[in-house]
Length: 328
Image (cartoon, rainbow, N blue to C red):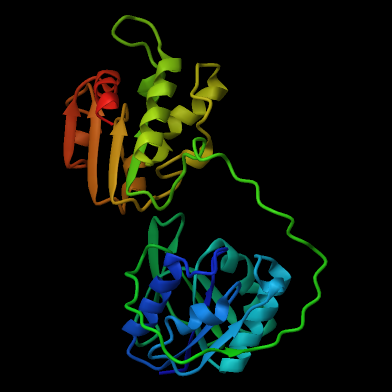
């Protein structure tokens, strides 16, 4: 097999993100020799901590490479690929690398493919298309070939420390400066890709209830309270986030970034709980990778009861969530 390079980057704290270990696991599964390269803050120490089994171990670190920036990331990645001499480059499909590595492949007269979910020893790769709805198999003769492995699609590698990394000196000139980060407060964060539970709200939360009135304000308090207490991730059906364009009462904290389904995201949480959602196909397709599915709906004949949920609670979501809140 052709020479393989596992190209990784560190996180802000100098450690390796989960996607890095998943990419390393793909390389180990191919049964071929591989080199290891890491860029970013504390890259040399991070590389050594997982370098057992690697041929060459390379690293690029320093103040210029500690932050995610296209110019510095591209220069470092190109230098590492050239130093390794690898024809196949496996890298995690993170925001940082998805931005930089296609340009690196172009600099090296190579090719890049994203959303890779599997690679076999014959270098046939499986890639997702159309928001993960379709999967295709392809191969290329162009080299170097950069493969960006989709996070969450492969098991993490078993790692051990090995030889120290060889530090490369990469000259760069930067015209931008990272001055800091702006993040929402912890109690405002509702999209958590690493959470074990996905809580999805449907349009039923804003409709008239048994007393003939809407309770949108209370619905917002119930949903946010549950999400914050359980540290779960919040999703929404398309119909709910579209209500703002129809002049109806809305949940102000929901945006199209929360949308789960055929026109939204396809999350990969272990468990999912749908509330006031009917579970029809355009919505359920977004639950493709959720292993345990539960739903709350007053209609026993809703879509969730037709083989799309492991458990359907035929009940009023308001009543269920009010009773659940004290238990949390």
